[in-house]
Image (cartoon, rainbow, N blue to C red; front, top):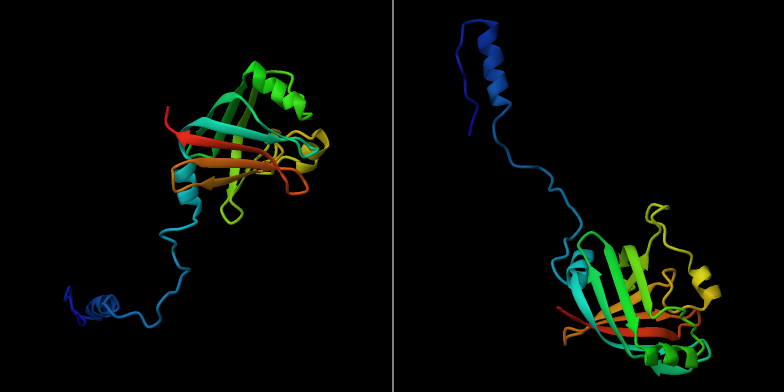
Amino acid sequence: MGPVSIVVRTGALTLFAAVLVSGCAASARQRPVEGAPVATSGATLENARRGLEGKWTLVSLNVTGPDGRKAEVEATGTLVSDAFGNLSVEYRMSPGGQKMLQSISINQPTPVITTTGRVVIDVDKKQITYVSEKADSAPFDAELAARRNNPFALERPRYYALGADGLLTLTTRYDDGQDAAVSRWKKGS
């Protein structure tokens, strides 16, 4: 579209209107604006949140004691993750499950273990870390969990894997990299 003249009055106003309208004429951009590529599939934060979101039911819980002894722990459990970065995990140990934990030197004083709070998801590491409500997005102190030798401590990062079979695996690890607790979850009820 070329310049358009609008005649309002003669004189300077006519010239001003012609220049104003011609300055608005459409033209092609001379330089394209480049941006970062947009991820549409694969390991994105949005995909991780969507994959984790919902209510999950515990399928199995395997725990390794600090000395390397292992136990399959009798327990039921519920995991709830929402789109806002909140994660709640609850394990309910049977009396036999509590004995199994004690047999591998993990002393859990109650049959219910609950971890609830806001989390940060690191997609590259496939890691979920609880953050303190008092320290805007600052993770809990991992050294504290190591001192407590507690595989369920909030301070321990959780590593997640979403399997092709639809199962979610959450793993906590000791400082030496050895698995501390591995739980498997199925989505629904």
